[in-house]
Length: 414
Image (cartoon, rainbow, N blue to C red; front, side, top):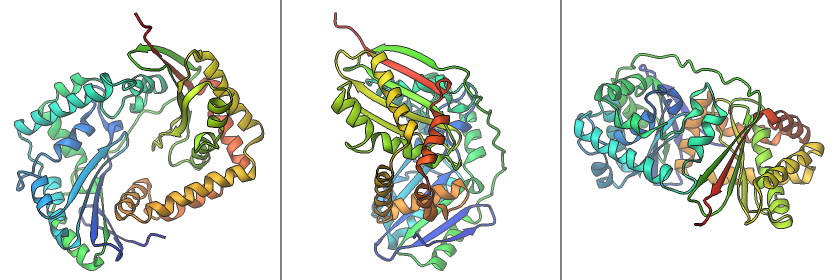
């Protein structure tokens, strides 16, 4: 059980404080409710660009990292399709430094041509290195447009194309900041060996005077059910043939999300799971294979992907995956099998609750979902899933028309 207290400042900033006397560190986690799904389809990659720009200095602080490092702190950030998260860990006696830094860049990020150009080049280089020049790096640049025709999940966090970042103007960047980087669109979590009243007072001091900004309603296009499955063959400089199969699945807020997530655990969590036992150990069709959900806030994807063994045809590997899924859905998992994956989830929760930064991140995430207390109840949702739920939800997900399949084929030797 993670205990916490929640406050809402007059400007709309949601503040969550968790006291943990077992550590001398404090985690300061700032989550902004903006991700790649909030971008204009002709200006993609901005959420990720801002992850970098936010470290480029602010009105009163020319360098973000230097004063933080001098205070013994560390920081980083990540962006996905749904939100952007910035986090700091720092000795408790230097918490004020972290609050000063975070509040100043929320109030007035320094938009200089030099900073924009530096970060633009960093993002473009990342696009090239991680997505265009790395084996299998462009998988999601190809799979997402297959799975999504209307919803902005159709592009990856890095964006649709390098040109969108190359062509970004100062006006574009300032507009994005004004729209999304405001107190009323943020969740601040402070976790560690702190006094709740003192922290609340200091947050009021540093963040309370920041204008709330104008609220903008999120109106995303709905994704309609696919009428038929989609298959794409890609050839590239990769070491092995790889198979990617992605089915549409319920959103993170759906009650059926938990059964869908457990299906992937039943398929591939550990060497005793079905994919490993059947497709690697017995049939020797794959060298490696896994299953997972993307965890998207809006309707997402359940994925099975793997590296094929030499000489195995894509059609045979795909058929074997489908057949294994059919076997699971015909009878459902037995009680022992289902209990095993639930126990692993429970162990994972205990591990995450031992880390002050993990607790801060989880509190912010569940507050984004609608209620921070979800951090204490989400495991119950998994424990309530029955074998019948697995079959019911699985039969809905694994309909033939929901499948998006990518065959990534290595180039033939010359």
